[in-house]
Length: 442
Image (cartoon, rainbow, N blue to C red; front, side, top):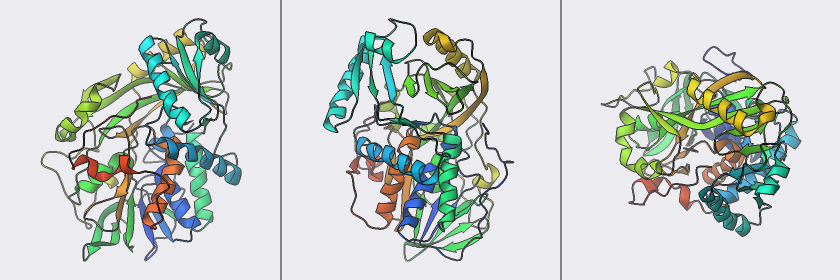
């Protein structure tokens, strides 16, 4: 495993063009797959990444490719996204690491089991192969402590992917097909003519374009604030570990209430505690009331003071295209892993899966997740800013659904009819008086 930082070698250094059809800000899974589908249709596209392609959450996540447990609005996109991941694997090879090994979500209490049973209505509506499991059936599926579970649900068609190599593999394929990718190239601001996007100003120069897609993850709110656009987005730290080679307890991914696992191609497991952390800053107060409804449904979040460089201070700072931007000062978010989260994951792993109790953690790391008040993303044109589109706030669920979201954005910017009902993901829900209804936190 290799975790990116500001000193990691540059891989993508294409010359900056004078003009392109579309500029994408952010080289994570959403930005790269949006570019892929645009290039597939013959559009010229430039991906500008301030740090490294997939340097932040797109390489630091759990590697789950799931439909299981998703918000109803996401489900149709997620179903297609699993298939798109498989297509990438067939076309680009082993670097994707795609395998349909199933995703298992367990319950050790009646309320948790009721949540699983309720979601089965969504699964049935979409014809998924998800099924409920009794306590006895759980013991047949996963090698844990017999009788520990009230039950669970499993979706055999869900999959796993290797995050560290997957997005970079797609980026290499995109580059080979004529897509332009430039790392260490922050977009400082956007220029407009007659109210419409006309160019981006990068640290390396100006590129003319009529369309910009902001897929900047945890940095989206700060970038937009400099344009006078308010996006209620906060970030949380999630800590992850990987084990050395280990006996097989389940070959897919599993949520065991107090610990999450995914079998890896290297024979170990990716392991995480549900505990996340939020550093309180100016944006925490700015967006407090919008996030308040989700507080009751968000378990295991810890609050910390200070240290979040993605938040705008009081008063908010602005910069011009001639100034060094915050994105050049912080190339890659590379937070230290939480010792507490690692301890909780280790304790839960030992309790739930005795076969893994003696398997050491080979490495630990952390990433910053871009979260929205209702735990679902924004995929929309930005009102009153012609030519600017936004794809962000995937709230820790973005990797698996990434290719589907990329295709949504490619359709959107080229004027294709939407394949899905995107009402749930509209930008205006934060300003039109809509009640924030949090999606599932699985």
